[in-house]
Length: 295
Picture 1 (cartoon, rainbow, N blue to C red):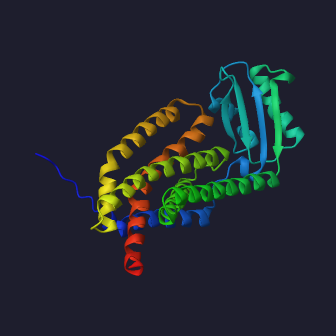
Picture 2: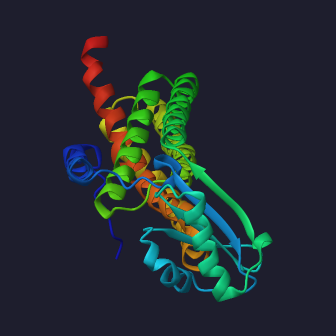
């Protein structure tokens, strides 16, 4: 028995937009009520990297530092994971950093040279990082709008950028809801996601452009639905295999890898959703709304 799926994607655009809007509104409420959980890269603070000489669980180090009340983030580092990176939003003085090192030194028999690095970042550094991240995303979006407009036409480009903006807002909403730290790895992942998502959207739009020539006597909504149907298996298979690989990195990787893998994994899923349920329906509705005006 052959199963037939209902590909009335464009006709249900209000449902898809409502789902996305609900997530964004919920994320906005959490962001206003609690604020985004900005990491050290954005807020400023202190970073210490220490060679322990042995592989140690981060929880053990965290227990040793509990009396300092740092609310710290501890990452394993080094080729043999025998180093730790201590990151805290608290601005520590030289005496406080020395006290922390002495506590660890007594436990792991450390020498002065085992303190690999100790840096303090002010709020201005965090503000510069945040502003540069926003500028990078805006420049990437502008470049992609120009590229898609030249390759297709403006409506395709506008629909693509709306989908990209959707992806970033959904990802930020998820981070606001679950209080996931927003750091430089998040920004790198967002820029990667923007490139991945636009590639996914262009695959669908390539088929849309072909079908516009082949299906001249039908609506743009039907053209979009058929194009989505023809590219759906490719889109899902590509995204699924990518998510599986990144998921493996998230499960098996160290904390610094997880910081990059988590937003990347979430972003790819959101980008796949927007390519199918946001970009193409917006293009179809936009084009159908202008048919009468152009005739």
